Length: 110
Length: 113
Image 1 (cartoon, each protein chain N blue to C red):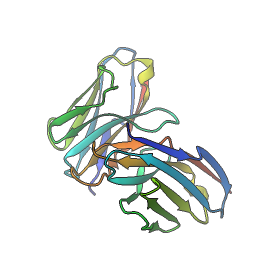
Image 2 (cartoon, helix red, strand yellow):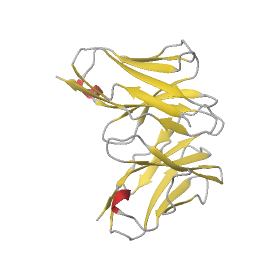
Image 3 (cartoon, chains in turn blue, brown):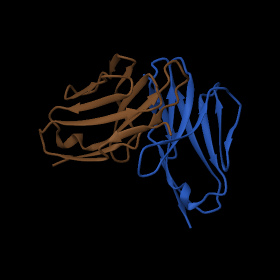
Image 4 (cartoon, rainbow over the protein chains, first blue to last red):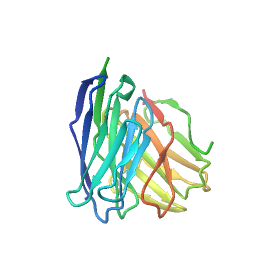
């Protein structure tokens, strides 16, 4: 059975801090690893990673995948209160559907 | 803009009273998914359609059914909602054969009284 584990489950930081969110996965016939941000609504797509060692970057957010060690990290630099959300990691394998982790609740205090 | 639309955004139903949630998409994606998300939990896949091919997750209760009359629309029917079915229901779409990116609708929050 495919499995995705995220850590930490929750994190509280102050504006300006840098955070690293972790995601490990066990997936049959791995195709991709995805990161989503979820506020009080549906998840919004951040990144999709398919190749090891290639960093994806969007503004203050970046993510990288290690297919050998089966994990990914999501970095957020210079955090802002608007970054407060649940960050979901999901893996895609042979069955076409996504397996989600339980998420990391990030709270950024002013 | 191409998008995934869900109606209604909020639905209140009574215990045991059938309810239907709808999802439509303008992305022309051939795969559509229904997820159930309870408070502080990850989305849980209920079923998905690959074109007209219906795929039910093994642990999806029989109480939940789905219909996909055409590429653009997909419905979630809950035949006899229980209190435990109160949740956010998310519809998502993807391009079949792709590496997995899914596009989510805004969700329908279901309350069962």
